[in-house]
Image (cartoon, rainbow, N blue to C red):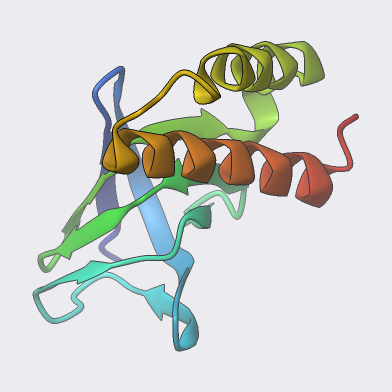
Length: 134
């Protein structure tokens, strides 16, 4: 069976994962899945969880902020503002991100930049709730 190759791209990191059987994520309409050979498309996903099921049946979970998904027959690219590997995240790292954002939030005068900072705080809080990290 053919598999997908999935590439995550953010301003900070580029990560490619091969031998992916399926991608599960969410849009405003709910959960959906992409399988190898899927029709080509580009769409906006909801910030949050992207699950990859590998051909070994291992499931990898990532959190992506403001993701855009591009699908071709056997290749997918997920472009986002931030990527966090759920199995490689620590409470300390999330706390440091959150504190850094909170320190500067009240000094941001630009409406768009403030909205981005608030979305990142919300994103971090959602990860902490989902993973039960304190």
